[in-house]
Image (cartoon, rainbow, N blue to C red):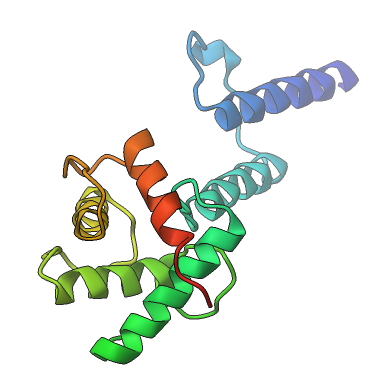
Length: 160
């Protein structure tokens, strides 16, 4: 009996570890174990952690530069009468990206839904906005090194 419990614990631990890494490549059905409450809780915690990582996307900005960008968004929101970025905390989350999308939409740089996700259309809006302010970016929706560098340089110019 003890051998069965130890074997099940090892298999469950290995399964959770593989799921956390992202795959069970090469695992056959003999590797699988019935789900237990421990495994479900661990898997749930792992997926919650992954969601938390995606909740912010600073596109390479440090906290000071992100705060400057949020202050600019706050100021433009007042000027153009759209919802602002929320708390000026240096974390570009959903509220900050919604404010950016509203700014880009106001300037006709963005025509997608206001969802707070820094996806390709939002990046295109950002690239157009940065080009308006002197960058020479290809508007491709990819947050590559040139876009991140231009964003860093621009975000550092606005003071709270």
